[in-house]
Amino acid sequence: MQDRPPIKLGILLSGGGRTLQNLCEQIEDGRLPATVEVVVSSRADAYGIQRAQKFGRPVRVIERKTTTPDEFNARITEALEAAKVDLVCMAGFLSLWPIPEAFRGRVMNIHPALLPDFGGKGFYGHHVHEAVLAARRTESGCTVHFCDNEYDCGPIILQRRVPVLPDDTPDTLAARVFEQECVAYPEAVRLFAAGRLDLRGSTVTIRH
Image 1: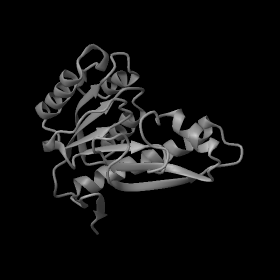
Image 2: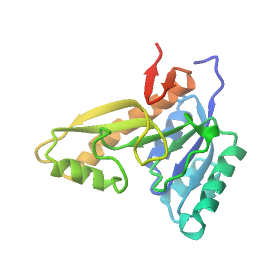
Image 3: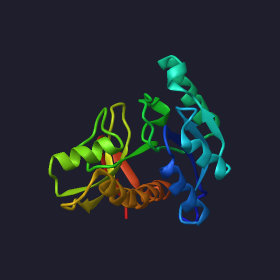
Image 4: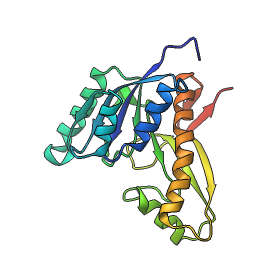
């Protein structure tokens, strides 16, 4: 991995940007061989913009509510192409961006549950953890996957699991899952950067 140049990331977000912060911190610590070339926010008031600016990362605000769907999608694609990104990381991005052919196999997402369970439209943030608790599951976790053009679908890269405790609330479960997200997402990016992810159809194989 040392022989490869850092990969260029484009980050898509809509909210607080904690996932962005985790990636940036690991980059600055030398644990993640990457650079964040552009951060695209679908909301002008997203706190993730401030986090991006704190790390000196360029930000583009492309608001879903003030553009047509076609314009929204085109402007996101243009921003990522202009930054010449190698990999797009969705980091709490709540809009569906139809992935252009040129980006197939180069867009990742992290979801706070063990997909395919508790995924799909409407399953984001605390809605996921509330559903896990309502279903009385004894285990939850997070999933990193390549994106296709459906919410929370696409080939799974890796998962990390956590127990669901008897006295859990959505907040306590969310905190435990997020700890594992902070491990899983950088690991998936490292595997991509090292050329160790073999994507064939709906299956991802990790090369050793």
